Image (cartoon, rainbow, N blue to C red; front, side, top):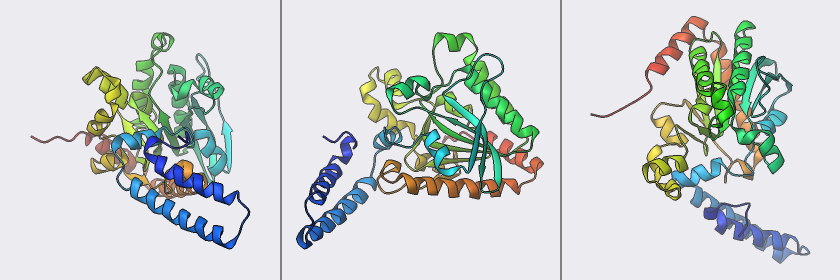
Length: 316
């Protein structure tokens, strides 16, 4: 089994392995033709598999270990980025990255969650799970954006807020609630993008926005599929069943008017073509920054208020 591919991608991995083996052989006309045929077959198979993914398979893609993280995007798409640290009260949370960013001639305040790829990075960034000081740092930067009339862009990628004893002692729930309260009336445009996994209040605390976008194979939910399965079925292994019930993928959230835009991903997911994914994200950010910058502040706040009051749909 190729560990760079998820279980449902293994048929693709087998074809890619054959292609790589042939490419390592001395080139000749016959082998070149066979490679081209295998590549065409691999592309067709990938399209077929990815045309009918289940919600659980999309959840796995959203957590793919080779999926791009916040710092990857910062390096790839921002022309300038100056990181700002600390909440001015307790500490600097490494799970929350924030600062002043620039794309082309547009400056904005950027806030994003960073998971980390290697074991060392994961521990350093606490697996993308922010503590209260992370959310308070984010709020400090949001207030700075409001003061200097800068738009805000946030990247959401977290399994949830950190549930440790120290975090609870320092007011985890209050910090999240405070962010939601302040963001609802913040007098500057806010754009949020779910780049991978958007989990619970830990994601929502930087995700209350005027425009919410999601990558095609990302997820956004009040709880993880495993957590939901543990509560409802007393069995985390039933996460695949829970994922289908949670309606946590971009197509469901767009249908229910919880997100405004879906950013398409390269064939096979972001990890298969990172450069193309970065280009798609950059174009989406530029387009939405231009759109929200043209809306008067009073109108922006009214529309944000209407959007928030419109959440929640039910049938009788």
